[in-house]
Image (cartoon, rainbow, N blue to C red; front, side):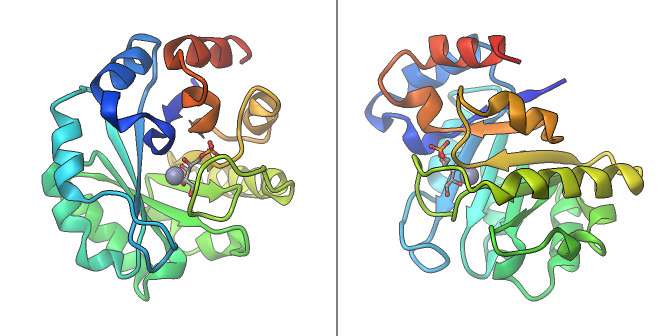
Length: 216
Ligand code: DX5
Ligand code: ZN
């Protein structure tokens, strides 16, 4: 079962209720919420208040992707705001294993993200404590970038690790995915597909999501 997770980064926040209703109606499984702090990545997006407000707009799990420095200082606030999945970057904290455990104990699913330069081997000693692994297929920070080809091989490596360890971890891919490569990332082992610009750019997000699903 492949899950589609539209990224709200490319949505129109002046009409966010409408846009969320459209993708929910079209069968999205998660809403992917990109949190950026102006430090770990240059851009700034939104914090726990916006997550709490989104919580009232949809019953879909909020898949919060924290692109922030010192995520250990912020995860509780995002959990209290209603995040169902909290994913932080392994490059952004010193004690990733402890943070994964803390997130799980808070009742959320715990995810760890890898930037394009971070090898899958970083997951060897984290995989048993993860509910989700996010392989970034662009450099984090903005939507609409081109898929970095090496990420396809990293998905295969991460899938092999997850299977070898009998982990129930989900494997999420994020960045540069659309009609042109959605089948390929699934074939490489991804089972949660984040798509921002491919769903929201140019209008009709519900129709776009349905067309992407039909390709699978
Ligand atoms: C980028 C974000 C992505 C972004 C993907 O740093 O993590 O979730 O929205 O956008 P697209 O699908 O347009 O590459
Ligand atoms: Zn993301």
